Amino acid sequence: MEEIIDKIVHWLRDQVEEAKVNGLLVGVSGGLDSAVVAHLIKRAVPDQSLGAIMPLDSSPDSVKHAEKVIESCGIDRITIDLAETHSVMYGQIREQLKQKNEWNEKNDQLANANLRARLRMSTSYALATNYNYLVVGTDNASEWYTGYFTKYGDGGVDILPIIEFTKEEVREMARVLGVPDEVINKKPSADLWEGQTDEAEMGTSYDKIDAFLKGKEIPEHDKRIIENMHKRTEHKRKGAKQFRLS
Image 1 (cartoon, rainbow, N blue to C red):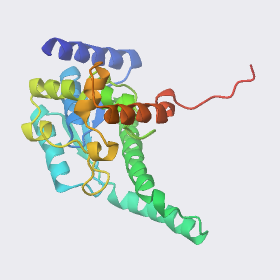
Image 2 (cartoon, one colour; image 1 turned 90 degrees about the horizontal axis):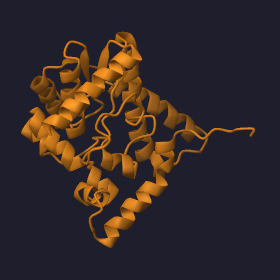
Image 3 (cartoon, rainbow, N blue to C red; image 1 turned 90 degrees about the vertical axis):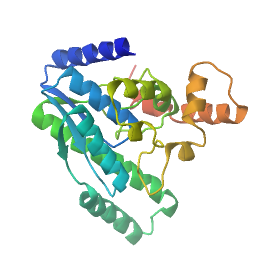
Image 4 (tube, one colour; image 1 turned 120 degrees about the vertical axis):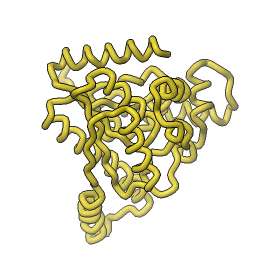
């Protein structure tokens, strides 16, 4: 794993040089994947790496874990609270749709959650432009295959250093890098609403997804869920469709 980490770190340095930027930025959520990426970019460009904490009605544990990640790798940090911005923006959207009697209550939670992810990414790019940094993504192989990321939210990044690795491999990487144990062992959650966990939302576990990606046998029920998620989210991995005259 140390050899793999070294390869990623060298790749990150290559991306900085190739893009002719000053450094790298990652949004630090307090979760496993962003913790690993924070450690990786700190190793790659120690003096020009930035961890952005962007609380948005986040759970106290998420903020605490994000701060512990920052401390554990020694990366520079900035904290920008997006709660008020989100409240104003989403409140205006909802109010105008309600006035037109076009508000879809059924999709409220999803629209709300996606806006949170996209606000964080917009903030990341504003910061990255200021410092002339690349925005580094945190999607792993399991999330990428199932499409468990927000299009133009946490999926809207410049580079993806851990996209080849399953959740368990990322967890192993975290142990080697020195990510705090409480972050490594916590239940994966995007913290998009109170009590939300990735596995409850997906209807299957990362262990099952990891096993599926490695060609191992898993229960048929979980296999159907994973395959359906992959098909349903193909548009996220392909980007926008383009009209061509020929």
